[in-house]
Length: 335
Picture 1 (tube, rainbow, N blue to C red):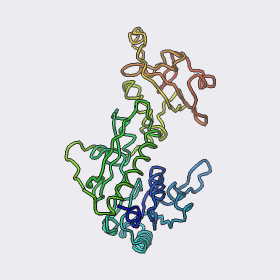
Picture 2 (picture 1 turned 90 degrees about the vertical axis):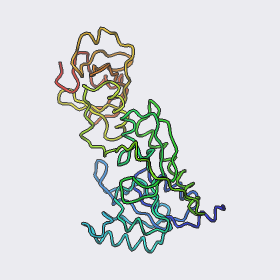
Picture 3 (picture 1 turned 120 degrees about the vertical axis):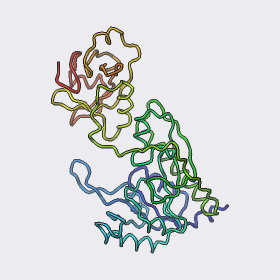
Picture 4 (picture 1 turned 90 degrees about the horizontal axis):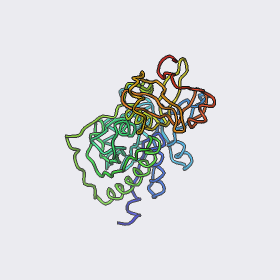
């Protein structure tokens, strides 16, 4: 099949964050004609809380692609004028297919039915595992060793559509949501180009998702950031990585809040440390490895921390400005 044949597709795009922007850039580089981009409205961001365009909008504007930013696509919802304007724009764009990646709005049936080839979604998990809003975070938090990308044909359900292609990625023991996100975004863009090339020649072979293995990646809430030192060292270490960069794992030291950005399970701690039965969150030692903290099971060594208003720092640098000592208790009053 010639590139000209594939690139004759009119590919509208719906997405918002960096994950989606990477896919849009890949489609643009591959030569697909993108007549319209849908993205979320500009949001306040930064210390000045000034309105900021999404990464997808920024890319579209730089490359002279028309953009619409409805608050909703429901014609019978709270923003019917927004939805009607988006409907008119999509109809005028006459896309053969709508590519969707981390858009953030539910697509009503009229959107799913509008393109000739329907709507194709880039989902950052191996469906049916981790359907929902936060598949990258939840895979790391759960201790999964593998994840991947699923390109699926969208239907009215929550990530329930037929699968078109899946590809696996290994989750490294040191991966954070930030590092895994970038690899998955790259993979998602590449796979979508391949799928669109197949779609252009009628080569798509949808496969229903299996009924077994369904899990849901619920949206990350800020309230989840607080570390429960009663959990195991392994659980807390995974949560620190899964909440990097958002919302960041945190604990308290008296009235102060500390962000935790790096940690390691201390495998070779002195058994006497556990025999003392110190309270959970108790700082057991401070050495070249970092700050050793008692958990519900095992010792966790904090290696990178941040004070409110400060920067992320290695433990040794952090301690120069925040002199922690053994005996203090994190997540509670100081000893």
